[in-house]
Image (cartoon, rainbow, N blue to C red; front, side, top):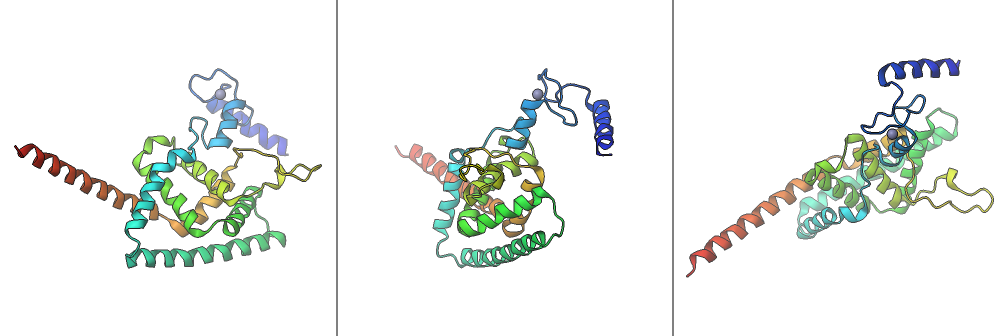
Length: 242
Ligand SMILES: [Zn+2]
C-alpha cells in the first residue's frame, strides 16, 4: 500500500517536474519523490532552501548591536520594562505548553516525530537560555531581515536559519546523534532539520515574541534617519562658516 502511494506521488511528480533536479543549471537527476538531486536535497534540509546562504552569527552582529543599543538607551523607559514583563508572562505560558505537549506525547497521544523534536528543542531552550537571550536573537533576525531582505530566498529559509540559531543556543542534543557505543554526542555543526521541526519551534516562539523585532527595527531606522538628518545639518552649517 505504502509502495503504491509512493509511486502515485512519484508519477505525479515526474509529470510536473520531469526527471531533472529543479535547481536551474543543475544537471543531476531528481531523487525519486523529491524535487531536487541528492546534493540540493541535502541543502534543503541544512538551510531551508538549496539556494539559501547560511546566516552566520557574525553576519548578524551589526543587527544585534543595534538592538542592544536601542535597549541601552531605553534602559529607564518604563515601556521597555512593561514589554519585558508581558513577554515574560508569555514565556511562562510557553513553558507550560511545552510540558503539556511532551506529557501527552509520552502517554501515547499521537504527534509527528518532527513536531516532537521541535518541542524537545524548546524544552532545552527554556532550560538553558534566558528569555532575554532568545529575545535578542529573535529581534536581531527580524532587524537583519528588515535591513537586508535579499539575504533570504523565501520565508521558509528565513525560518530555518532562525531556528538553526535557536537550536544552537538551546544546546539541544539530538538523541539520534549520540554515539551508541561511547554515549557521547556526535559533533555536527549544521544539523539537518525537518519542516515540522522548524515550524513547531518557529510558531511557538512567534506566539511569544511575534513582530517585536520589527517594531524595534522601525525604531532603529528612525534613529538612523534622525542621526543622518543631524549630520546633514552639521555639514551644511560647516560649509556656511567662512
Ligand atoms: Zn541539483
